[in-house]
Each structure stands twice: as structure tokens, then as C-alpha cells.
Image (cartoon, rainbow over all chains, first blue to last red; front, side, top):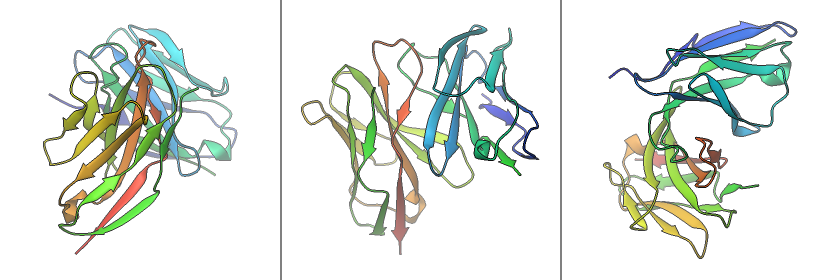
Length: 114
Length: 115
């Protein structure tokens, strides 16, 4: 079974631009979550989607948004990029019991903002 | 709000020595507990989890962790480490009552195994 696939793996943007990251979950998984990983703040929850609906959201500004499609693939978008948005963005999918949190992570999209 | 504290940011150890990575969580509500491992330039991999039942849980590669409710701890142990165990380890907690797949992570412990 294929794992969680994230694209692109690496990207460089400049301040003020926007970026869209893509995530394909494990086949059959309906929950997709996004996390931001930085050296200073560690791993922080961005949001979770389940059956095309945002089920939960972390404490991030409105510049961070996401969506999920009917095939469970998900995208996240960051608008008006700031230097502090440089991070590894991890997507995770889950097909288990809600709240049991057995997440399967992709390898991440590393965003550098110049 | 829940929080997770990993008491050691770095743990150096020699190969074949035992190791313990410490983790404490703050919440008094019922939780699920996890340890994830991250190798360089990779995502996170689930190492082991505590959902219910026996408080001692084991992974397939020799790690074990014990859930201690009274001390709100979930320390990770391995009796004999290998060079290949060098990685960053993250403890995480999920609120049982939330019904969401949201994990609160600790800051991570970098395990460095030396020959």
C-alpha cells in the first residue's frame, strides 16, 4: 500500500508570495491533518480535514488555509508569505478510530521563504 | 491546554548501552499516548502507542514505554541501542474525548548513538 505522498518536497518562495502544498493520503484514509515543524516552535497542529470538512483547527492566522477533495487528497495554502513561515510542512493521514491518533506521515514539504 | 514535556533535548549514548527518553504530559483528562521517530529528512514514523489496557507497550524493534497515570509520564526505554537508533524521538498526546486526530507533540529528544 502506498504511503502518504506530499508534493513538492522542496520549494523556495519570496516574502509576499503564496504557496500551495499537496498531500495524497493512504488509500482509504479519510482524515488528513497538517503540521508545521520548525526548530523554534517544534511540531504544531495546523488543521484536520475529514470527508471534505475541516474538523479542527490549530492556532494559526487566517493566511493558512486548506481543503480536502472528494478523493481525500488535501491541499494547504499559505498566502502573503512571511520569513517565519519557513518550515517543514507535514501531512498525515488516518483511517483509524477518531481521536486514536494513529497518524501516518508523509516526508514533508520543506518551504524556504526568502 | 495540554502540553508535553520531553525532559532531555539530547541524549548521547554508546552502542549496546540502555537508554531512557523521558516524557511527561500535563493533562488530567484521559489521553492516548504515542512515541514517534524521525530520521533525517524524513517524516515521522509511529514507534508505539498507548490507547488502553496494559500500561506497558512494546515496539517491534525493541523499544518499550510504560504509561504511568499517577506521574503523568510515558517514558521510552530500550535495553540495548544500535547505531541505527540515532534519530529524533517525539512524544505526543491526544485527548480521548476530543474525537479529533490532533496530536500535541513534545519538543523532541535527539538520540545520538556512538560506537
